[in-house]
Image 1 (cartoon, rainbow over the protein chains, first blue to last red):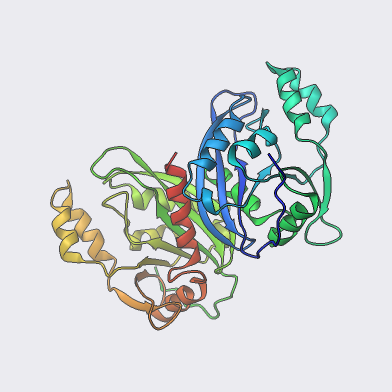
Image 2 (image 1 turned 180 degrees about the vertical axis):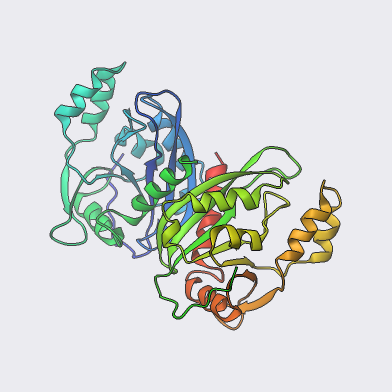
Length: 195
Length: 195
């Protein structure tokens, strides 16, 4: 899919932040994944949810379906993920997610991804080559300063220009150094799984 | 418990908004109830969750435990409920909730409660007298103008002065005519149950 070039980024741009809930690592089962719709960096407009398998291979498909089937889909302008691995090593292929949803994707992490460690950890899982390929498919890791010169985060992008993605992260990181939609998605996903 | 008199209501007062998820009426089972911690009317600080029985009698106990066992408990200054009935007619006794949590309680509704209709509906349920007593126990219904002179909501209170409760509703209703913590609790509770 072509890269979306934003003519203008509105302060109230509808963004989706996606994060997963807590779970016991190396266990089996489903983990909730929550999508939070924000207007820019201030107002929560909606919440959606799906479940993905721990260390499974269904995250791309499940998250795409969650978004496409949501009543908020038509308002959304960009998808932001908390990294590309959910529920352990259930890897999201950001190119496929972009193609399926026709929306730009920005995967954000606070720490720089350590690919050596990831590749090592993958060895213990079935289909480790497929997972590794999906991880590499997310492409270049960019540094972004969000709230100020000291608070650096990392992003991988698909279907969006580096400059536009940076502007969106800066606009929406109102309360911490990550976009508010991602900060809140984390709080909700964690909060609903600790019963 | 004595009525809490606020010397000053800080703009960043920690409030909890509690609402329930969607469910098929007259079915059986559990419904998620979500508590959302807000700093005043702007920032989401945390999310908690419990489950209550449809038309059950456990809402007061479950919601009290959820709050007392939360890591946010000590920061909270007031509890706000979306009405006093959860998951159908699982009624919260706001006096008991106040006594158990030692926090003021404000139950907020957009529509004026129609007690005649409620009493009628209760007749189809077991322990209807007990439920009715709990509903009456919530006391007087006050009118409050939140964002402006046109947007009126209704509240029942326990452990707080009418004037303080009104001020808190006005301070925290930043985005609609109900407190932001309640608006967001509704979006989360609905969002996580529509899988």
